[in-house]
Length: 312
Image 1 (spheres, rainbow, N blue to C red):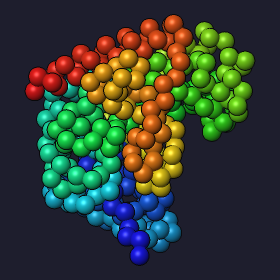
Image 2: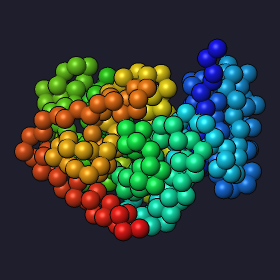
Image 3: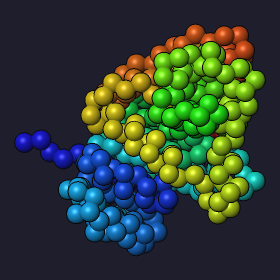
Image 4: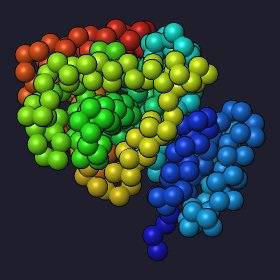
């Protein structure tokens, strides 16, 4: 008998609730929402449970306020932390969210040491680095959700510009999940057609710039929170690749050990293969001079935040 998979969502805010609904729809496993706010994870779980006959799903959802609910989870997705407010950068959240990640990391080490861990909390690259260090889980089992979202945002803007379906656009955004992220012009394609044949570099650069600040654009519009639908479905896509052993090529924040000339397990957005063993392969794509320069700048920004984490 195949046992049902268990997916723990740490943080039952807007992203957590979105992921719980999508995971239930996809029937990837049973879901437990964990949050310190009493009643919130329980309420959201019950709300989705009551819609199961409409959704046509048998997933079981529950809510908890205690990290013991992590026990034996196959996948843990961590969104816990403060979201950005207007005027804040992702990096402004560093110290307050580090303390949350440290607590969650210790709990994962104790209750779910065999899980595949996806970190969504900002500042992303520093938080996933901290999670791997604190939890002690192998680096291939701890990843950050950023590249899937950033690449999807760029694909969205390219599709809008060209008047085509977003699902036909393939895009890659690498580097740190911040204003220095790098959209790759030569690696973008539309229905298999290389983007440089359809769009000039100047237009692409404008769209890549909008991609880098896309999170801030949504924060400014919402005024009381940050993006949650697109980050939620992006994290679910990563979890699905792991649970179904898809060997899916996705851009994620992965630990680099020699790739792209980066040592020491520094986390950065790069294309990888995700399957049943977590990150099974890291692809080293050949960047042109301009892209390499931008990637190095992005890496330096990540290193600065990680240096702070190392001092804790």
